[in-house]
Image 1 (tube, rainbow, N blue to C red):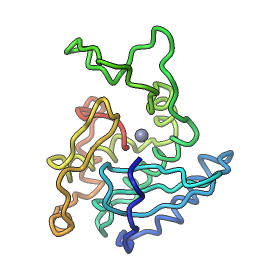
Image 2: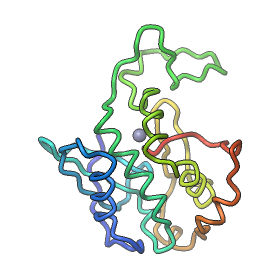
Image 3: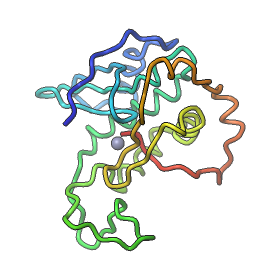
Image 4: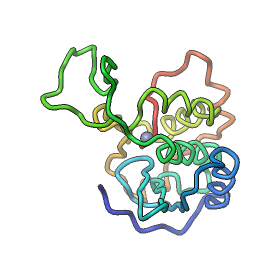
Length: 194
Ligand SMILES: [Zn+2]
């Protein structure tokens, strides 16, 4: 597991820790873990680390750490990462298709891929808890699409060649703009966070 990045001074226009508290209180009332969050240079959009008995840290990629990042986007990532505590990775069940293997290519992995971090029930629960997930993910891809790489087998979205100077210049669209463009069928990007 990657080391936890050093936290950055928060530049978003909302209090991320307060947002995390609110989400945990309202959507995860039975989750007893003490969870904190920070922004930093991590390989993926988001990451969850267990740092002790009943203690977790959610890391959010630096690209979110900007005054123009909409709160609903960070909200979605926090819900996704908290859900990883509620639904831990599990082994595939007998006869269950592995979504990490592209059926298009028909390729079988040389060795078993191990427990799956995003089993089907994870996505079902995410849809329930994060009604803004589509607009949040669309915003992320509109703003940073060229820098993101979805890795099927590792089940995550990687951020490529990130430089904070570059990050400051990226034009972040408004969430209203993205929401207006989003139609029911407009869904041409992979699911997920970390
Ligand atoms: Zn995830």
